[in-house]
Amino acid sequence: MPTYLSPGVYVEEVPAATRPIAGVGTAVAGFVGFAPQGPFNQPVLVTNWQQFTTTFGEMVEDYALAKSIYGFFNNGGGRAYVVRISTGADATESPVAELSTKADKKVPALRVKAIEAGGPNVSVDVKAAPAGDEGSEPSYTVTIKAGNETETFTGTLGKGKSNLATQVNTKSTLVKIEAIDAPAELVASGLNEGTVVLATPANLPVNVEASALIGDSAKRTGFSGFETLEEITMILAPDVVVAHAKGLISIDDVKAIQTGMITHCELMGNRMAILDLPAGLNAQEAADWRMNVTNFDSKFAVDYWPWINVFDSTVGKNIAFPPSGHMAGVWSRNDDTRGVFKAPANEIVLGAVGVDYAVTRGEMDMLNPMGVNSIKSFPGRGIRVWGARTLSSDAEWRYVNVRRYFNYLEESILQGTQWCVFEPNDERLWGRIRRTINAFLVNEWRSGALFGTSPNEAFFVKCDGENNTAESIDLGMVIVEIGVAPVKPAEFVIFRLSQFSGGTSISD
Image (tube, rainbow, N blue to C red; front, top):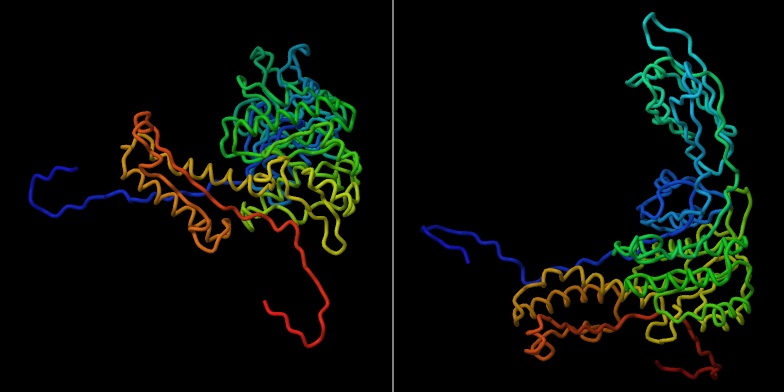
């Protein structure tokens, strides 16, 4: 309490009895996969397609990551963390050549590195530019060609805006130039004229190691790199099943990676794994994969099937593609437009032009109870997600939206009640906690996230002397019991029709 020493009017700022809880984000994705450029094993936040391509490069035929990210943003995704994994062919991914000095052709003066690996060969041609004023530094014209693209720059080896490397690094979309610490007198002699070629294969080889994607907790590699990022709510790895389709990894490796994804989600407790099934499976094969190959039982994982057809600009035609990235985008769009409490189903998959397998109602009757969520084409209604189940055998956690909504509640309450730590553990603290959580859950009920005609039917919050005994207080614990009644999707809508005689009325 402040001390007053002289007469007067004083104003005191008193903290409110209730501190508001703000809902946390629910649609932040974590992608792990292969890209032609960018840092390895370092989670990088991207919020749009341009940011992704600037860091990790454009789409590459053999890699699924970029195409999956594009589907994520196209379907309403907003934020994603990307971890690039080494393919084992990284030494050739960014081809490098050196421009030598004029005085000694064996001494390099500049190192040229291609920005995009996996594209056509890049040629760099150096010629002396016309002489300028007497005493001015010699200048050179560099012509860079890759496929149908051509760039031309003229500059010197001196400092300032006219520096050749500065101009290329600022404007070129094909290469970067790095100055080499060569002897000053040799650099001053200028550049050797001629052409160098940065050779790169059109399609990069891929060597998939299951352990690289699963990662190391101590080194924070692979999925383990997401452990420090509390805001991530879903993880996916579309390159896994694509690599399997190309014969680069075995079924056992696919299962090991997906097991690692689920283990990571269960460890973190605030995110879900969106899993892809292998390519080309019919309904019976999908059921066999679910029940006999993976046989996962987890409330933190989801299966989507079949693959969708999308246009692939790298080959100029429609291809079958794993749906996980598009599904992550659908989850994000659903959260923004309706709320995380609403099941992300009966939603259009934007960017899909077809499905790889036309599922029938009878086949869905077989797959849905197993937790395999179908993607189906409906005449006149587009291609839609037609399932909202987790891979859990526990009926309490059967639905995706229930698990995700509890993740949201738990994380929101956890983050919004950090002020409680080290407060005096008495009735006043318990009352403040009750009022804070009650205010948050009332808003959730009003938004339609909780079942019931009144807040009393929708939830309860208990924090008093009954569940905070002297023993628990001595242990430094505050125990709060919270119960909520989440809304569940109307998965089966049943209309009971019957005939009745004319003139007979049926009351409600």
